[in-house]
Image (cartoon, rainbow, N blue to C red; front, top):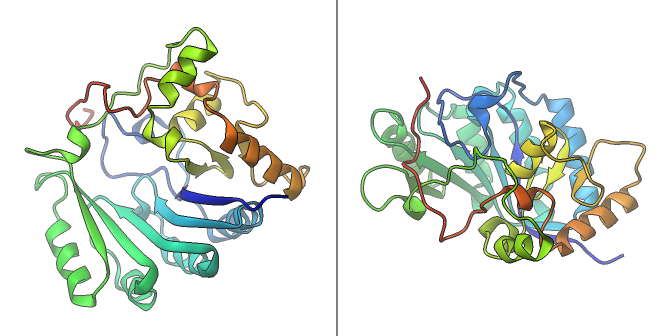
Length: 268
C-alpha cells in the first residue's frame, strides 16, 4: 500500500477552555459534556494514528485550552516518542491566559529542535499572561509564534462564522468548486477528536451532532478495533483523494473570499 505522508494533524486533548469564543473554530463553548484526554487514551490514539500514517510534517496539540488538561505533560511526552515520524515540528497551541508549567517547559526545552509554541494573542483583557509566557520561551530558547487576534492587521483578517450548518451547495460540482478554495481542504489539514480522524473540526462537529451521517471514507475511527489498520489506511487514502466531502455541502469553507468577523468575541 502507498505510504501516507500528511502535512498537518491536530490532536484535541481537551474540550475545556477558560475562554468562551463565540466563533470558536472547534465549537468548544457549545459542548454539552466536556472531556479531557487521559494518558492511556492518548497512548491508544497516538499508536493507532502512527500505524495508519507513515509520517506527518507538523503534529499540533490543542483543545480547548490544552493547559487545562492535567495530563498535558504526560501526553506531550508520549507525542515525542513518535519523533521520527514527525518530520518538522510538534506545535503546542495555547491562548496566553495562563503560564506554561515548568515541567512542560522543561520538556519543550529538551525537545526544542522540533518544538514550536503557538501563542494565540486575544489582547491584554483576555491573554493576560502572554508577555510572561513569551519571556519564558525566549529565555529557554524555545521556538514560538504569536498569532494576533485583536486590533489592526488581524491574523488572516479575522475569523469566519461557521455556526450555520444548513445546506449551502445543492450539487456536488458546486460543493467541490467551493471546497477547492478552502485552506483546510486544499492544505490537507486533519484533526483527531474523540479517537476519530477527520478532515476538519466542522466535519467532526457535524457528524457528532447528527447534522450529517458518519460516512465510510470521510473519517477514520482510529480506536475501532473491529477495523484493521490496513482498512483504516484505505479509508484515509480515500479521504485524502476527495475533492470535497458531505460536510463541505454545509460549509462556507475557510476561504479567502468569505466575510470575516471580529475574533474572540466572548459569549455572555
